[in-house]
Amino acid sequence: MNVLLVEDDNRVADYICEGLGSAGIEVQRAEDGTSGLQLAREGRYDVMVFDRMLPGMDGLSLVQALRNDGIVTPILILSALGEVDDRVKGLQAGADDYLGKPFAFAELQARLEVLARRRADEASPTILTVEDLSMDLLNQRVVRGDTAIKLQPREYKLLEYLLRNAGRVVTRAMLLEHVWGYHFDPQTNVIDVHISRLRQKIDRDFPTALLDTVRGAGYRLGPPLPEDAAP
Image 1 (cartoon, rainbow, N blue to C red):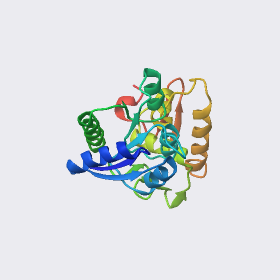
Image 2: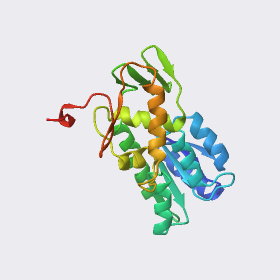
Image 3: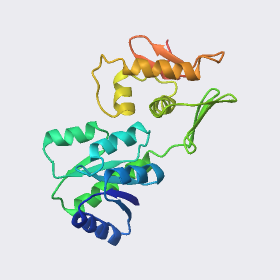
């Protein structure tokens, strides 16, 4: 397992690094949110651990920045702010788990192993396709036919989720949870705006439209699967 630790408290960081190192887990540490963001964007980690109160960029902002970039690596927030409201804010920001300080090292290690195992279980092909539209996850490249399509980070994440659910209707609530990572007002038009932009890029200049609006239900990319087809 390869872990990124963003923690400004040297005592806590040494404790975690020594413990994980003894368990054969590789750890790379950053001391502030800004350098942590750079490492998270450049490296490949199985799990990331962020302190919530960080210099440069706080832990929640760091999580949100990475999720906005489409980085889905599991993140555990480690914080002395351990009340229910604090944990809820961390999870709504896009973290996968939240552990309050002080903590037992055995629990931290167990939580990290669960997150890493969950990610391994969710392993998927590196290329997603529907009809003549394809997404290369390793190179973050989208192509329809012979035409390369440039997407903004949020559009990319939206298309990735639709491709992973190709042929199935995905609801607005599903998109809010899995693409934005936290809950907007259900009446917000943020989804409509991004769907419209994505449709312009992947459908407008092509003879066949792939992204459909399913009235009263949500959206579907590609032909419906048999179980979703109308009788």
